[in-house]
Image 1 (cartoon, rainbow, N blue to C red):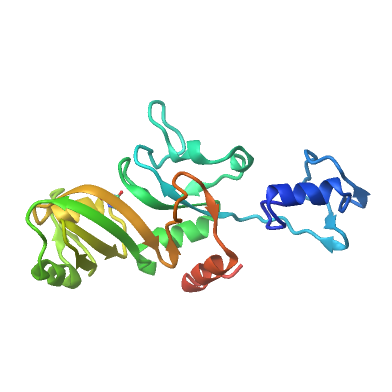
Image 2 (image 1 turned 180 degrees about the vertical axis):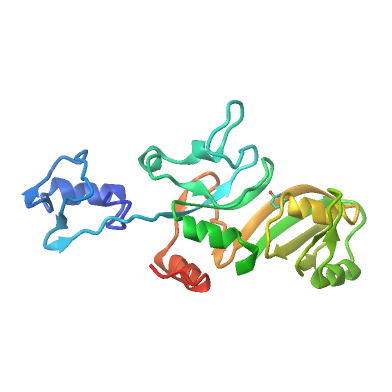
Length: 235
Ligand code: URA
């Protein structure tokens, strides 16, 4: 609880406990496995500890993981949640395809999750794409900026304007503000390009952690505050 609530790393809070600095309901607790309950009063020295209810993590999802909490056959992102967070009811925000890598946010804050995925809040999601087919052109950049429709399911879906940057070697970067099923793949398929590698690098102000593939990393206080402000969530 202390580590999850921001009072230090697991090894730092362990030291606080074994040194006798932590009290629960007035009694010093030196057992690092001691469990606190909701109404317990926990103190470090003379400071009362407030347990964090909401948790916010970012993950660089590796290829070959389902964005689901359970599957009979395939690895899921739930397999990447460490044991000490297994009881925290973290869920992925939105979905990345099995082969898509990159930024996935995991939280137990339903309101944040809702606002991040609702098209109403227009949160930017940026993807790096490697595709097959003729190189995309300035004409595509213009069409993407104006917004176009998908008709691949028999139903016309109007897409919001998006920002396409075209790079060399059949690579590009696309920023969208909504999240229809397989949206990026379908947007390129409309122009006869097929996505061969897809990586999400940013959601709003949150960027994918570097060199941390498969490891959950908690938001910094600044990242969390900036995101909450952008989404008008007051806690
Ligand atoms: N768009 C897709 O097509 N796939 C993803 O995983 C994410 C966005």
